[in-house]
Length: 378
Image (cartoon, rainbow, N blue to C red; front, top):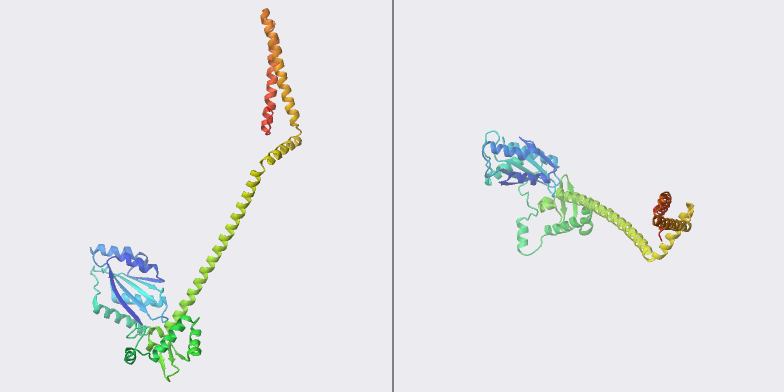
């Protein structure tokens, strides 16, 4: 059994993008489905028919639980071949609802002769439904006159409803609806109907029948409506199980992400705590750290065989010696110059040489002290 809906669009690209997005199966007729947009557009441009209706849209829906996506796609391909010969078509099969369905997109322009396809009105609907029903019969799929009736009421039931009363069939429907929503599985659903309500359940092939405890005869699910047939109910529980698995996987991923975030936050907290404690000790113990630094420095000088106190004393002696040498030289030079004696040149050179040597020694001592972090100028 398959239901048919027809439509048209002025933007073939938009329709193809929508149908492609959720497709689990896809197949092209007279074109490659991967390049359908460009091929559709090229055909329309070659024949100068780019305006108006660009594509026809057929939705072919199947009875829940009666067909697989692959089988449904093949039915859709055969329907497109029979319905639109010479036209480029793509069949996209969706399984995102309780019922598997095809989106058949047909290019409005025939790639062989450039003629446009006219598919409008009740006559077109009847033609498409007839072809679809024939294809379903060939494959052993059911064909019914009221495929879209989720709940079916007989004339007798309609009379009861008008009087404001509830029929025994409606009592069955209410019990079935409740257990479909609250049972964990299809088997659990059947057991609950019998144990809680005294409703007997009988299965034969693809059909299911129910027996009200106050009535002696069984009523088939299809008599109650599409929602009460075996295929619909089984398919609903299958989707419920898949949805539960997906939900469980999402929860597990969320827990893993939360655990990871928690570990990261703990690590950051520990790092911040350590940095804070180190900073607090450095800030609060500045004087102690200065004293400790001096002790460490003193220990380093002893380890390297250097006595800082003696180094400072030696530097001071060099300064005094340099100053004294310069003073003596200056006095002698002044006296000799006052007497006009030129023999002071060698002495002056000797004094200057000694002064330069002493100055270089002092400079070297100071540079070595700075390299080691000392200040001998104090």
